[in-house]
Length: 85
Image (tube, rainbow, N blue to C red; front, top):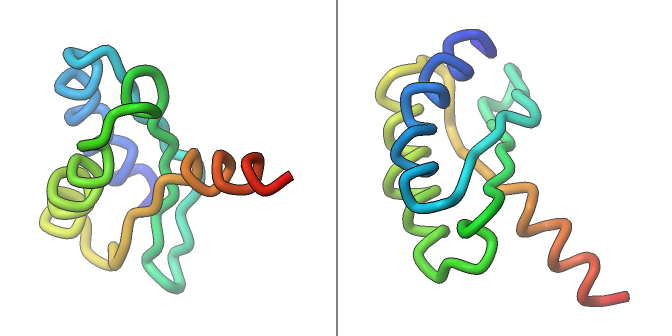
């Protein structure tokens, strides 16, 4: 499953990089189907990054890789944790 997800992310990556961002696979929970990625570069401050993640990356992964249930951006979790310090 992880190999399939990585191949899909590699196919998506040029579109994200075209907007001065990037996407990296960070983890896959094969039991729950949750995929964690990190959006970096321009994606960090882009207000459309949530739409890109959910309507783009998550939709594509669900369509192409059986078992994917959700895609989360761990970069957002890190930023939220840092702000509360």
